[in-house]
Image (tube, rainbow, N blue to C red; front, side, top):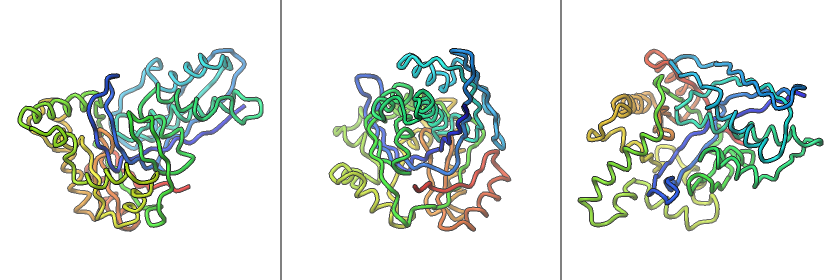
Length: 334
């Protein structure tokens, strides 16, 4: 039996990082948008119980991305988890057409893991309807990574308001004016270390805390404060849809990790590579006509949202002269 599953990339249009939780994770408030860019996974069952073969078919246009050892591949972890929870022993060959750069803040690994769990759930059920419930799959996905639950629910909508450590997902449909907005992604050709980015952000905030009497000034210093507070008070997706329906030039969204990449006091090889790079790419996107530009996740991919396809294509061609991975895509709409 063979099965093909698409694994879309995502953007964080907004990403606010709260304090560290007792379990070691951070609270987040984030706006996730699924993209037309994605990986494609092919599953083939074989008559060798418990066999697992994963082949990565790299289709990235540029950049020196590190190989992923099989034991550290999140798809391997997803298969192992599914087997342990269900007893599913069918041998598998999985081929991944990889288009999402790893370590780029686009959720490629998390999307692949979600795609694997969803595919296995159908393969394991004789009628293909699914062996486990959506709630159980989401809980399994959350144990693999904080971004995985979003992709488990991505069929319910192309966007979601995500909170907690990533396990609280509130999907919603994009407003008509936001559907299909052209996006240009620019990856500098090297990954960003998420754990290091969090460590540096915590360090910057600890330094501020020594000179600050109000703790909320440390964790709520972004220009979209009032909008975020309104999201929490409104029905699921209501306020965020209203904001997204307006011009991207007026979007108040922000990424707290930009604090790390623009803070000269943060001594790190991560910042050494990202600070000037991130600022330069975002500035270039705006100069080339992007109505909104930012950083996705903890980097290293920056993005620009353009008013039309012609401007986006012109910017893509221009940026290809300077950066190894530049891709034109658009917001998915179901």
